[in-house]
Image 1 (cartoon, rainbow, N blue to C red):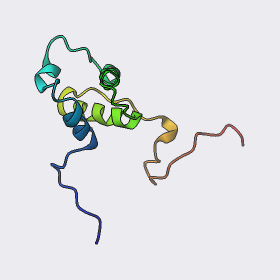
Image 2: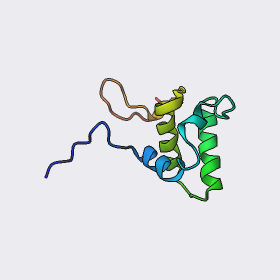
Image 3: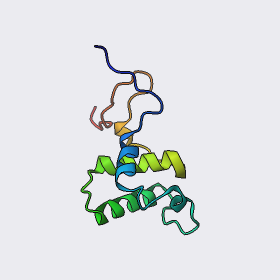
Image 4: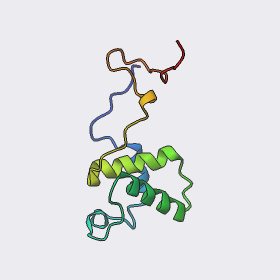
Length: 104
């Protein structure tokens, strides 16, 4: 059977992690309050790391970033950091480029 089509309303990993582990204490009103601690992407990532640690969830870096992306897409809309320049694919070919060499 060919690959399954993912519907637009299918939950992301970040959403699943958040709804499974965080929503009991963190409803959407918490994110809109005036005293929120996350003021940018880095602050949001710091808060997710802090609270997953307090809850002893032992999330991977990827898990943390998925939850950060979910919260940012759904609520915060902070500017995400750009990927390292050497990690970006070439716009014309889509091929991953290595860091520029200084040798000729």
